[in-house]
Image (cartoon, rainbow, N blue to C red; front, side, top):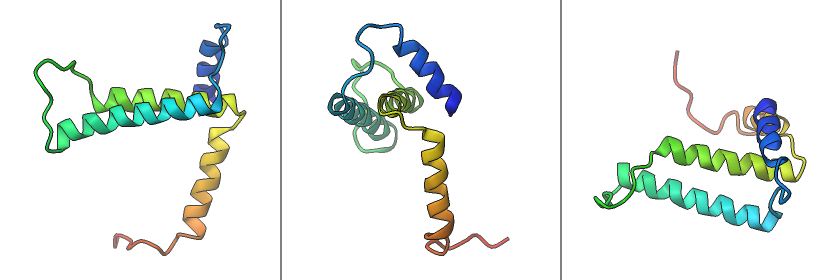
Length: 104
C-alpha cells in the first residue's frame, strides 16, 4: 500500500494544482462510487446497459475509486497501511465472535 501511495503522490506532484480539497475529494469519491454502483447494477441488477453506453467494467471502476481514495489519504497525510492494520485489529478483537465461522 505504501508503494501505491508513493506512486499516486509522484503522479499528482507533477501538477501545479496538486491534490483537491477534502470536500472536493469527498465529492470525487461519491462520484466514483456512483459509477461503480451503476456498473454493478448493469452486471448483477435489474438495469441492463443501453447499447449506446460505453463498455466499462467493475474492475475499472474499482480502480478509479482506489485512485481517488489514495489521493484523499495522501492529501491528509494518512498512511493507508496503518489505517488498514487498525481496522483489521478491530475486526480481529472486538468483532471476532460477530460472525459464524466456517467449520474446518
